[in-house]
Image 1 (tube, rainbow, N blue to C red):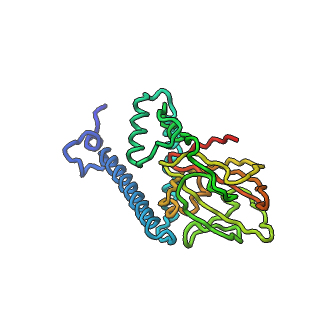
Image 2: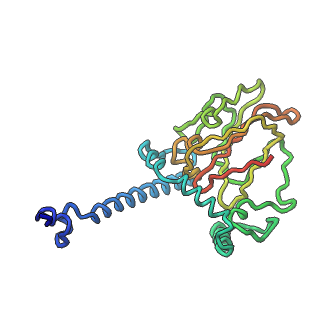
Image 3: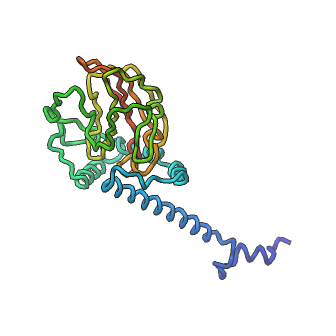
Length: 278
């Protein structure tokens, strides 16, 4: 009465006919693993092609990912991975020797010059990322507007007349979408300039006011943490408005230089924490 029938016995216990048995669980595991590896390899290859285009042909936009690929990227747990990395990078429960080993690896890999750093010893990896400059290492230029941070300039647009910013050739995103607020009209005799700067791993992770800036509003906008490297900027449509960010809105009062200014500090993969210090 309790003995399995031959059919159930075949499906559950037959180990001699692995590929012909449709109920072998490992077959589905291999299929699922193969699909995951294939999808990951495809995303990596497309990302590398976008990196090549960003290096060789920065003005073109032939490597933009499709809507389906973007949906696949949004399904990846990049926010959780970035949060976990942030917790580990500043955790005092991780051995100090591990933090020092990671710092040495990053310094060697990116060929970072730390001679201009105020302190040479760091307790955690996070302390290394937010390291401070030595005295006199970053003199201010005499121009009324300077870059707010170290990094690579990805885009410069002068005399922006409409509410659209060009990401790459053939792809735009709106100012309102990025700042979650309109920037207001441009005064007569002035022009609006938009600059995108990518703060790299080897750069100082500090952002300073680019001019005499009076902040009137701070807006936190949740979002994804997709890569916004030069490759990601050329690959993912509207990556900046999609990502988590903190927006500072205000006005400039510096002699004859007057007008509205907006600063959007956009998080990315493994760089999703932003702290404000006024």
